[in-house]
Amino acid sequence: MSFDRTLFEPEHGAFRDSVRGFLEKEAVPHTARWEAEGLVDRSFWKLAAAQGLVGFNAPEVLGGGGLRDFRFNAVLNEEVVRTGTVGDGFSLTNDIVLPYFLDIADAEQQQRWVPGIVKGDSVIAIAMSEPGTGSDLRAIKTTARRVGDGWRLSGSKIFITSGIQADLVIVAARIPDEDGGGFGLFVVEAGQDGFERGRKLDKVGRKAQDTAELFFNDVHVSSGNVLGTPGEGLHYMMKNLAQERLSMSVVAVASAEYAVDLAVEYGKERTAFGKPIGSFQANKFALAELSTKVSIARVFVDRCIEVHNAGDLSPADAAGAKFWTTELEFEALDRCLQLFGGYGYMDEFEVSRRWRDARVQRIYGGTNEIMREIVGRSLGL
Image (cartoon, rainbow, N blue to C red; front, side, top):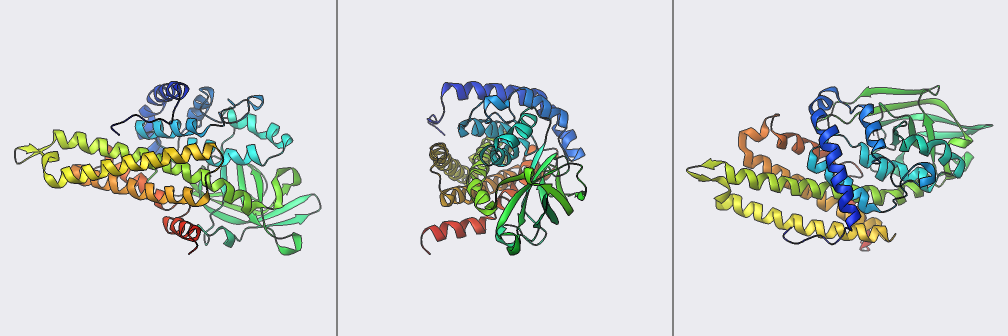
């Protein structure tokens, strides 16, 4: 943008400098290896936790920084994009999964789990999607049945981010009518009988983010591992999805902005027919349009962050932000790759990885078709 953002305070700028320095030192040099190995080292997660980048939104009494200000989350997500850091660990933990432990778990559960999460000792995940159920959470078939001393959980999940390494998995399950009906959220711990991890899934992009199938074969879940009120699980998930989609929007705008910067720089350097390719009208106009779209998107998302911090971000606005920005992200990266020509299709060029990694943004967190449906319903249609 040609004008300064007004969203942040000086403390956010200091945080940004700290985050960027840490990622450039501890993440960037390992990116290629993490991509090849298919996951990010747990040792990196411990280093990030020691730097205060994991669970900083948790209360100080539980080891966190007490920073329930989504602007810090946005800064971290933006710097992950700018430095080209791979993996979704930060946004998954801080923006998506940890809020369930902070907002729904009781005091005993928080004391039992949150300090380990903040220290980087415990990797966390949430299991919603199933082989036959994606964006339609009401179609979940995994079931949790009451037993004398708790619950029995049976079913399978797929596309679970950090599923291979997770120590704690929040599992969304249907509660049969005879047990009260509705949905519940159940915390399954690594090593429990009946909890099995399937294959680490091979994906088009986001190669360094482990994504897994999970199986629950009559897993016993004690009453102390139930989050919130059984039967209210769908309500909890719908409430938290607004922040998840805002997080994705932050990433998408930062990614689109980076793509434009990359394309402009390359357009000035690469020549064809004796002149920079960026000076050709087709390229110049395309980049002018994308630059303007990115500026508009950033202003909108910054406003969404302000509204979210005030507790007023609606599901429809979050859905609108998610589908608009992720569509723009892929448009920007696709145009950037096109500008690079054959080199853009080569793995050694950064744009190729970013292009692959961006594609899933229009799918997960709720497909963009579902996001449009949510916005349309908000209009009374």
